[in-house]
Amino acid sequence: MGAEFARRLASRGSDLVLVARRADRLDALASQLRAAHGVAVTTLPMDLALPGVGQRLRSGLGDAGVEVTAVVNNAGFANSGLFHTEDLADLQKEIALDVSSVVEISHAFLPSLRGQEGGFLANVASMAAYQAGPRMAVYGACKAFVLSFTEALWYEARDTDLRVLALSPGATETEFFDIVGDAADGGSRRMAASDVVRTALSALDRRNPPPSVIAGRSNRLAATLGRLVGRRRSVEVVGGMMTRAHAAA
Image (tube, rainbow, N blue to C red):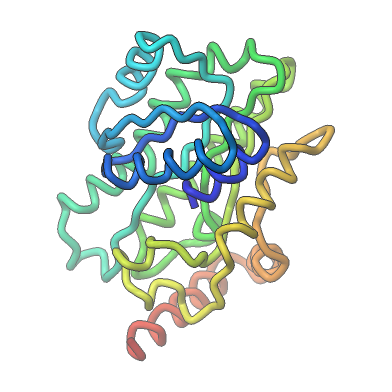
């Protein structure tokens, strides 16, 4: 999904900074974007789960003379399984990437973003933010944090030109499932990453962007039904879906 954000923004003529762990993949994508769109692309190989990532990013880009006008916090991963059987170190890495890095990067760049005309901050949450997720308990809690956190920042930025958005995809066809396993989609149909990113950018293009947006009509309906049936029934439904999906895997 991060690569799709990069492609869409490059097609609009935006210069980019790409940040991820694997330098070879960053460089390959950067070469494609430069050739296709003639934009400047800076690559920064970095483990975003390490403490202090926000300050390191800001300092590194400042030293390189790069002015950041928009930020997309897209990196994330999940662990899957019964909570008491999962490795604690893996769960701590999940929290570091899915929560701590979002907070640190947002904090590092928000002061300058608030002064940018037409700038934006987009944080990727998830449909998992809207109900508890048995067998992915920590992931759901992390994404609930991202949703709440980002909506609060949206309100705080209302007197500026900064647009703030939380994007909540459902199951999406990305490498996410290579790590967490196919059963983590609960048997639901996966959206294309291009459709998810289109939803986010369309929301940001609105005259008065919302604090959050859910990608996919069926996902928006599921979130609404979840609120109507109540939290107990909602978690029972999701838990049943995940149990059946893992049994079939």
